[in-house]
Amino acid sequence: MSPQQLKIRRERIQKLDRALKKLFPNAEIELKYKTPLELLVAVQLSAQCTDKMVNKITERLFKKYKNLSAYVRAKPREFEQDIKSSGFYRAKTKNILAAAKMLKKEFGGKVPNTIEEMLRLPGVARKTATVVLKEAHGVVAGVTVDTHVIRFVRRFDLSDHLNPVKIEKDLMELLPKKEWGHFTHRVIHYGRYLAPARVYDTTKDPLIKIYPSAAKRFRV
Image (cartoon, helix red, strand yellow):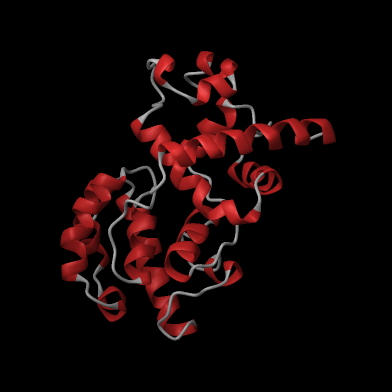
């Protein structure tokens, strides 16, 4: 991004973020969990699955698998059935159970608190890692980029990329670090409760006034 683009986009995103704060002042993660391990499992299950469905699954799952040892001992075929409604359940089972074994063997049974260590866990990319670090440890290691954020960034012309890692890099340039951990929650709430991917009434969307061209960009 050119210096001029950086300046324009930085001003735009700060206006958008201020508006999002007013719209969703208490935006937080909607996955339900009690421990860092439960959070890690829930976030892994949330890939291509709604938080609502994940919470329905984990309500039962966390009663059955109460600690790390339970995941280490879990039978893959049985675990697959426990999480089947999350979609991609075979891959998720493989990653979750492998991550549990790595946590026990290499991390003393604890969910790590650095981005480098988190990224070593099976099935954990930057999206999962940044969520878990922030929510479980209060460590802000970047900007979490999910489908809501990708759509938001494209609609409001905040990046030239579609790749989540490149989008994150741009957002880290555009936003002050103190906002990195909160921005995604606000954008997710915006996408869920005000501006869905389908066509909607943009006259009721205050962010459109900040960047009118976004009114025409329902889908990306």
